Length: 200
Image (cartoon, rainbow, N blue to C red; front, side, top):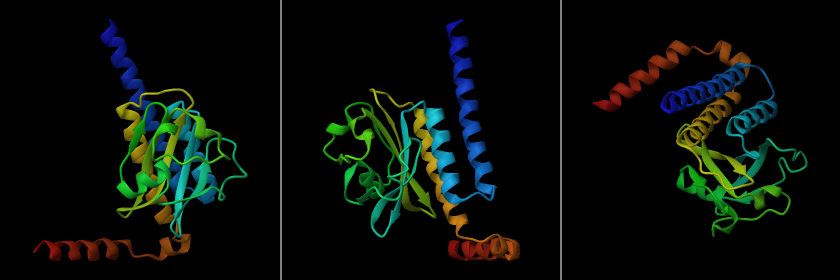
């Protein structure tokens, strides 16, 4: 009986995880402002993780800039910055790795404190790089006030969301008219031809 309930709970969680991916995909194809889309994504992640905060940083001229927050930090968006060699967030960029800390994250020697953000006093952090075209362009992270052991599904979800956000940011650079005018068949065939030549 217990095994059956455990299986049901796992299936329900997987369905919720799939729903997050689907909703992000819907956001990616809609014509919303990029800021609104990123805010919607961090809120989706925060709700799924049942965390106390979800933050999104993007790289700008060698610095990580806070560009999205599930918590009410409107005055800090675009203002909180750290260098790529600073903090746990910078470590994730440099190492291109997901990082999970289940308790006392603020005691980690890589940690950098920002007095403007209450998340500095939180216990548990989970980070994943935002990746576009195999390059790290930012970091998404979630925080819990209390100790929290991150599950494999939570780590997988945040890693995948980081990849989805990276793809979305690449596409966002293209105007709607450019997408309509582009010869997608030619693009696919040319890339396929180059790949085949490279294999020889």
